[in-house]
Image 1 (tube, rainbow, N blue to C red):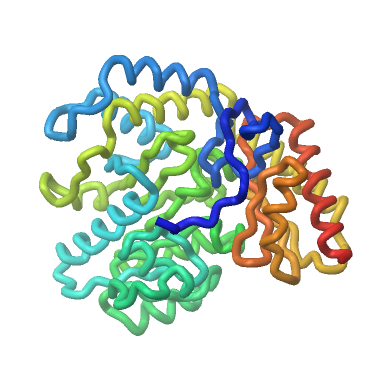
Image 2: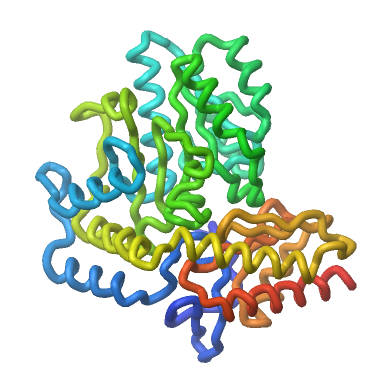
Length: 386
């Protein structure tokens, strides 16, 4: 189906932060498959895990115990401080699990029409429930009637959440991205998440964090909420968890971890031996290379370099980032920069129409980081001077 409008390039192989197309042209990947390949392409540990498990056991279903699934769950809970995990095949499914968990939590509290507070300009997926939770009219267009039970408020506005708390008695949870990814790498005020945590505690709501794009060390921490020294009740992961192998996870803690019971949720493929062994290897490798520190150091290098090259330039509205979640916001639409970047041998992304989004692999070298700033700065300056 014509659901995509792909760029006119096909890649045949990758190695680290680089890709090669059918003609052998090399590209520097500053997008990581949209925050997926944190360990880059063809990482030897990931490749070995795939081969070893693929030649042993790929799938049995969750009718039986799955050793690799338990190993990954234990490791994830150890890294995150959460209590339990439901494994799915994608970020959208992880968010579906979180939404269902919140609704069942409300049902158990005798709330007949539970509601979840979500944010404007958010992105949570393209299933019917997750696109209804998403704060983007373009993504929702044509799929009405939407799933009810979501109240949209402005991102980074604690008072808006407080106002809803006063007006509605059916709220059961707040679902929020620590940094809005598709919304343009929007970084909230320093105490925003702490404020949400306090409101949720005060009202007996679940605090649910969508860390699908921000998690797995990309922000400079294992999870972006760790900058705030808080813990959510529910957290969703995907993207960087599998480094390209499709896997999602909905983690829960405390009372939230006890909501689901046998038969209330499930997945045929979710958490099979293959994906779980790969994801476990990804976590172990990220830990081995101290990926949070690498993302923090490289992100600062790139951010400082961009600010040195572009600050004060007419047409540049903002240069921002957290770890290797980076953005340059222009004062005009700039989607054509994606194609111009391909011509120059670099993969970038434009989101929210005028925001250049950069999500390079965590394993990039300092030299590659500087190459990104040189090439992208040149593309932007050329584009703005036309």
